[in-house]
View 1 (cartoon, one colour):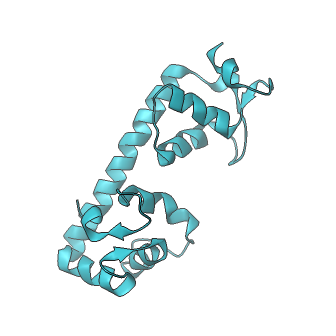
View 2 (view 1 turned 90 degrees about the vertical axis):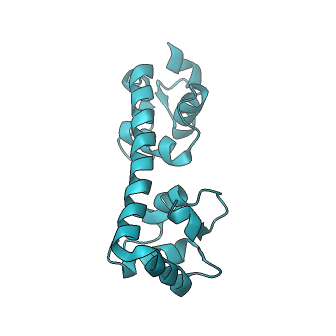
Length: 149
């Protein structure tokens, strides 16, 4: 069985690292957010191993493609809502208030979304994936041009 090749400990299940290796080797996604979303669909808890009998290449492929589509839709929808609701000038003021040099770090991004009433105060961890979606150049800062593309 294909998945047993990745079960390095011979337990009949895949650790998170083993499971994401399968996804990468199948060229389903290299995006960490997508890998995490697909893993969470299969795992019973955040750190659970995934039984090999629950793995199917065709289903994994479909789930990875859906996660990629969902990720892009979320990014596009949020940017469109903010631009439509507040306009580019309002977004610029928001960036000026919470960031420096037209750039937001994660904390400023969360504060800005909370100020707009779009997100509640659930902590930084909940927003890391969303922040990563908009941080197109992966420099740890969200520039307004990345946000409204």
